[in-house]
Every structure is written in C-alpha cells, then in structure tokens.
Image (cartoon, rainbow over all chains, first blue to last red; front, side, top):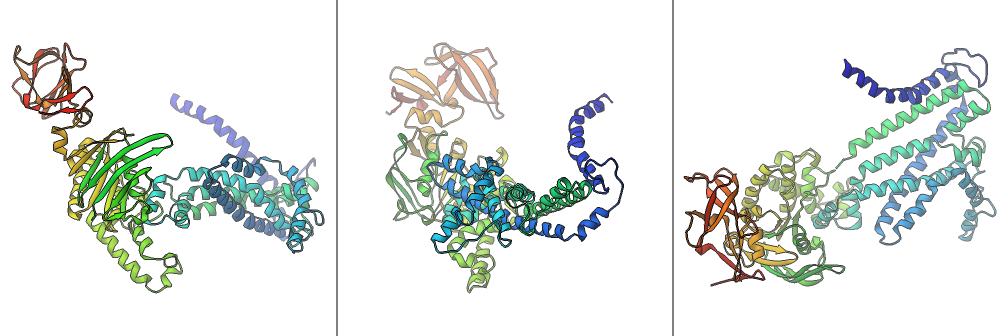
Length: 289
Length: 351
C-alpha cells in the first residue's frame, strides 16, 4: 500500500502538469467550440455543432485550409531538401565549417517579425534587390507580395529560408552518427562514387533524421502565421489566408471565441492526422541502426 | 587467389609516424595474422593494403599488380569489418549481392523502376541471385536471405559480412578483428569455421587481431607488430617456442613468460618449463607460493622469489600428486633446454 502511495505521489507532478498544461486547455478549447461565447461576454450558450456547420459552409475556411496545405507542400520539401543539401555541402568542406554552419543557422535564431521588414524591402517591386537582380538578367519581376498568383509562394519561400538552417543542423547531427565503416565497405564494394555513397549509405542511414525533420517541418509550416500577419494580412484577395490567420482574426479581431475554437480543433485534428500519416509511412522505410 | 607483397611501407599522420618500414610477403592461399596490442598500427597496415588509407612510403603488390595508385574497389580485395558494416536498409541477399550489382550492372540498369526494363538486366539479376545463393549456402545462411540486418544475431551478421566478401571471389580477404564483437562461445566456434572456410576456398587472408589465441589457432603464419614495427613473422608454434625478441616472447603466451634478470641480460622461461623440485637442487629458485589458480586441467602457481621483482608463474598438471598451497615454500627449476636468453636490449642470444 505504502509503495502504491509513493508511486502515485511520484507520478502526480507529471500528471498534474499534463492535465493543467495540455489536456485541460485542449478540452477547454473543444468545449468552447460548442458554444457561442464571445470574448468578454458575460454569458454563453451551448449551441452544439453549429460553429462547425457554419465553418464548413464558409468558403473562406476552405480557402484558408487549401492555402495552408499548398504552403506546406512547397515549404516542407523545400526546407527539408535545402537543409539536407546544406548539411552535405558543409560536411564536405574542410575549412570554415563553423562559419557556414552559423551563417545558415542565423535565420532560425532571428526574429521573423524583424526579418520580415528586410524581406519586404528585398521584395519591393521597384527598388527591391530581387526584382533588380531579375531585371539584370532580363526577366521581369512582379510585386511578389501583392500579386495573388505569387504571394503564397513568396511566403513559402521565406518559410524555407527560415527553417532550412534548423533542418541543416538536425541533418548534420544525423550525418555525424553514420559509422565510417559503412562508407569504407561501400568503397570496397564498388559503391564509392559520390552518388552511390549517398544512395547506399547516407540517405538510408539518415532515415530517422529525415523522418524527424519532415514531421517537425510539417508541423511548423502548418502553424505559419507571423509572416502572413506582418507581410500580407491574408491578402491580396485572401490568397494568403491560412488556417491560423483565420483563427486569429475570428477569435481576436471579431472576438468570436467559440468560432475560433472550432477552427483550432480542426487545426489540431489535421496536424495530428498529418503527423501520424508521416510517421506511419516513414517508419516503414526507416531503419534504426 | 593472389600473393600479397609489401615493401618498405611507412605511414605518418602529421608528424606522428605510426608504421616504420614494413616489408612482408604473403603467399597465395596463406592465412596470415597481424597480431599486436591496440595502437600498434596493424589496422592501419591492413587499411593500406585495402586502399582505404594511402601509405607515406613503400609499395603494395597484389598478385602481379602494383596497386598503389588504385582505389579500394579496383584492388580486387574484400574486407570484413569489426562492426560488420552491413547496409541496414537492404536485405541479406541485397547486402551480399551489392559488390556484384555494382560491378556487373551500370547506373541505368541498377535504377529501381527503369532498370528491370533494360535488356540483359533480368539475366544479370538472375546470375547475381545464383551467386548470392551459393555464398549463402556455403555459410549456412540461405534461410536468412530475405531478412534485414536488424533482425540478425551477431554471429549471423558476421556470416553475412563474410558472404559479401566471398561472393566476388576476390584475390584476397582482409579481416579487421572480425570476431571481437561476438560472445566468447561463438568466437571459438567462428574461429574454427573461419579456418575451415579459408582452407576450403584456398583464399589468401590477412587477419588482424589483438587476441593471441585467435592468432595462434588460426594462422599459417603470425606477424607480430609492436609500436609500428614488424617484430617477427613466423608459424604459431615457432613464435611461441623461438621468439626473436623479448618483446615478442612477452606478448605471445598466456600466462606471460617468466623473465629472470641474468648476467648477460635476461633469461625467459615459459610457465610450463618451470618444474617443482626438492629444496636445494642446484640451479633451483626458492620462493613462497603467493597464489594458486586452478583452471581445470592445469594449475598456475604464482611464486614470490626473494631476489626477483615479479612473481614467477609455473604451470603444473592439475592431477599432479601434490598441489602446493598458498604460503608454502618451494623450489622451481627452469628446464635447461627451454631457457631463452636475451641481451640487455631484448635481442635473442643464440647458441
């Protein structure tokens, strides 16, 4: 009996913090999503799934869901492969490794809000470096953030720039863990060329790292919000309206907390589903040691 | 099968010289072991033969080819690593077959989807499967071909690594401490199997180990290396009975040879050449028993002799009429014809 009490006592801090910090808020959000509560309102009423019914009938919601997926489909592969490429290149050089590592990691450490100003300037239609460079090689740029056809992809490119450094560091850790023997065995087996080394040893041995990097990048890019808020406010004509931005405007601009909670629940379900899907399909092809 | 010849091999890492002027000829079909403590340079020497490391001076011949300028894959050698170095994402069959796939098929033919559509690929794949099955059969792992390395025991992984080495019928096998990750029992079994395999294939093998039992039981000849220098190359029996230097005499043999300071330098006597005699026998060394170790068939007696810095160890038959007890006073007589004499620099004095 005493042992059982001790066990409960030892488990309780973890359990309490789990309830207070994770399970509680999630349950509260779910409960709120079934009400018509508005931020600051003295009363609220249970309205069942009305919020969801309204949400699924709303064109803006579907637009923002689709935009979020497009953003992910561009920025996840982009930042994963760019991170991998950078890691391989930096592992390949013998000098100034620390400098390159720090340089590419810088975007991760910098505040995106501040960096957004720099991006805004770079992307300026007439005096921005991007368009000036394009003009120099004979191409015509556009107003990247104001053109509905390019705004979302421009944000995705900024997302890639921002998270490639983190992915690079994770891949570098993965590369360090690959035993040298395997490369030597490949060398003797005749798989010593750069491409064969990559195909026979590096890529399969990076499996666990790739899975982790992909899942984390997926979640991070599904949460895209700050660049949208600072650079485009969801526009032009809702072309960069993403899920969290919709949730933010509904809940904090229009104070429709119940409705915002419903969007959050959808967001959580989608992220959970995507992550499970990635882990399931990835695990089958991943070999741990 | 090919002979291997090393001439004047030296290797430095920066200013640290790890191999000094090593010359060694290995006959075709010979099982030669490089034996030495860790850090003596034996693995580096093996890697130079393999082409994984470039020597600072000297040359390597495999068969009648000078291979100094050739990369590892063109030297027609196979290597077995201590860690087995199997590709974890490939099946056993693919692991064993990889050296053949890489050599018999070009880049396009190896492509996963397009490859099988190209002419000749199906026949090449079938031939590779046949060769893989043959190697697997010889190693008794045919039933494991569809598994991944993660599902295998240490001993099975070892066999797969051997299979990958065998399948190509290379000119020589290079083995870098291949048994040291196995448990003791399996190690003894694999030792016998590996020797048997080598005889059956008639293969040239260079085997690197720090374990003298492995060296003495498996090899045709043993090359003892100490701090980057080749000390002696000889058949196991010869190495044990007739070491050229005190260092070799001390490194080979367990328990260690007894070293007794003498006027001309040192006298060294194997534990089994020290005999119990009655007190007062001329030439006997008197002492007190410090420790008695029973190892089953025999008994090791550690004796503190009054004028020697280290205890002497005598090996006697466990079924001897009288087994000395701790604290007992006794006398040990070195067998005259088995006393090895060395000068003060550790070189053997003969005659």
